[in-house]
Image (cartoon, rainbow, N blue to C red; front, side, top):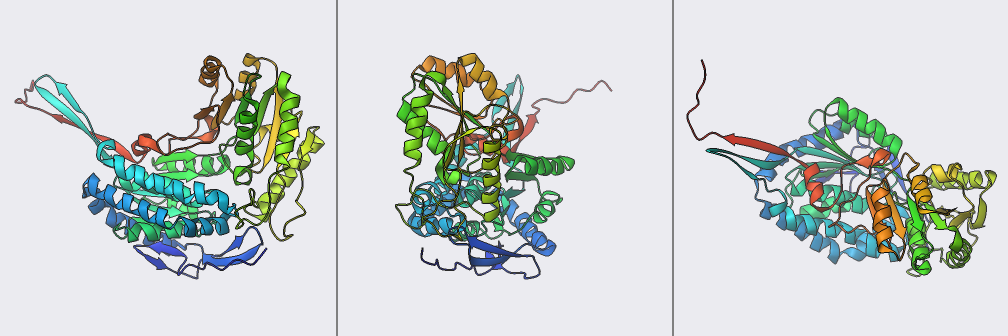
Length: 491
């Protein structure tokens, strides 16, 4: 595997339309997951940097909110065009940032971010409309107004997409944003900020600051921040939501999951296996909505497992910059060690290791690679069936009856996603109506077009990303009563 070029940004942060550096912040080394090579060095935001970013956002936001929705939308759509024109460059950066294979990033990462800017740039003129309320002689009206300064906190699995999924509705609604990417993937969001300002976004409206676990509280607790949107783990979400609630801030929480994917005996078995593989192995399993508990009806269990094993062992693992590679490394050494520890627990607790379970022998020893892994004969009480692993580990459980599998699928604190494969469309709708999840699929899995709301229930979070629903979470209603007659008072 050849060495990759360094991609050192001009500064660690992008504030008020320009790169900014402050070497007093903690050093963060960006590592290419395929080799462990340092490709960039940035510094975490100091309190002074945080103040500077929020002050820039606060200053710029009122004038931006006063612009017409059409004018705001025009800038967002121009940013989408630039992203598409530079898709290859952005995809290569995403691969360097995350280790995901280029065949994946080139179709799923910058493109989905561009879709977000295009969608919200197009719908903002109607998506922020209010209503007229007749009250006899009097009347009232409502209007949606921006919140002000919004904070976005990103995860490391889809850094460019998340930067856009949070930035696009926030900006479309008339807000300013300060975005903090994960310290594991600090590079992509800086390019998004560059492109937005190249597209004509006024200075100060989209700022990116680097940081670690000490930086988030500085943002969340700041008195000038009106809204926090987090993509992350459930434990992190609890902390951020609690801090935001203490100051009555608006919040959107897109958190983890342990989602069920149910395969009934009449399902198209090849499609079901394909859905299960995409819902466990895409992005090396580092997707919050993955269907990691695959419930297979007992009559087709052996056929399902046999064909799943054969297809899984054909996955091409290797250099992420090679377009033939289907699976790259995990994002970090620590994340791979965590996943390997779960694999050990699965073996210890009695699950049957069908395939995988270790480190592939055809790749660099310095990269954070792991084999796609399938466990069969998994039972509900096993650790690998209860806890989010966030790696390419599929747990296959079997079931007999519909009512039984629905009860077992719902027996979790999580409620992000779920899927059903069956040829009986009546049963499909009956089952998804009973599954406790925010985003569900029938006869497919993990498709998240920008037109569709995405988000969870229970401990998997609240609020929605994408679609017109997202605008509601970046704005609030203002209601005006209009009196048309003289006021009569009893005193």
